[in-house]
Length: 139
Image (cartoon, rainbow, N blue to C red; front, side, top):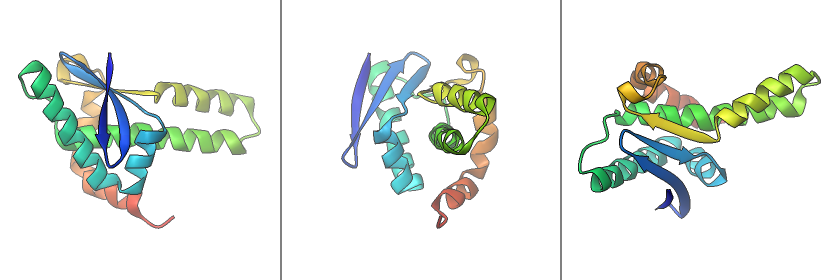
């Protein structure tokens, strides 16, 4: 069952499981991470980890930077795919963009042995400051 975490007047839906969390990627999350990507995302990650610990009496075994980069990867990939859909004249591009959007609706963040993609986000985690700087650039 999803529960709501309120952060900066945004309601973020999160489901807590034994070795993973699932975050609904909706307008609330998008608004939160778009306004101030680094600080808001760091705050969200901290709240998720605190709640995970409260529910399971153990620390969530995913690094903070890895979680943040994964959240950004899903939120901003969906934005890119939606933008491509609006300008693309080719149906197969639209179909590919739609598949990307569907994959991004729920952000499943799992511990190493419970998430096949954990290595990607862990690999990107050291680049979090660079990624954040790119997200904060003037458009």
